[in-house]
View 1 (cartoon, rainbow, N blue to C red):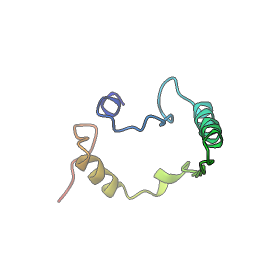
View 2: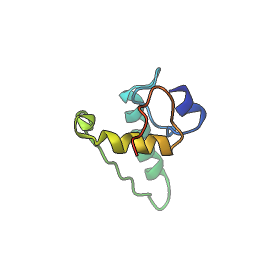
View 3: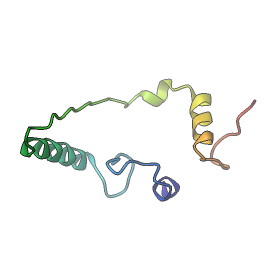
View 4: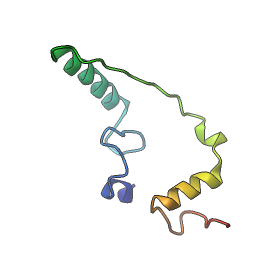
Amino acid sequence: MRWLIEHNVLHFYQTAFRAGHSTVDQLFYLVQSVIDGLEERPHKKTTAVFLDLSAAFDRVWRHKLIEVLHRSGIKGTYLPALDK
């Protein structure tokens, strides 16, 4: 987690799996974005997309995930080596 934060891999608004952050923060960001859009003239459109990823890693292609992580610079003993 420290590496992700230090290398700016996580988006500022990423709250999941981060200490001191919660879904309440996400709701605050959404509400604030809507308010900011309504205050602009002409009004800015606000779009929200909600994804339920609760079972995403049950079906993820793990080899591809590891490959993407390696290409992103995340390597070490905590990730299995890629078999080429």
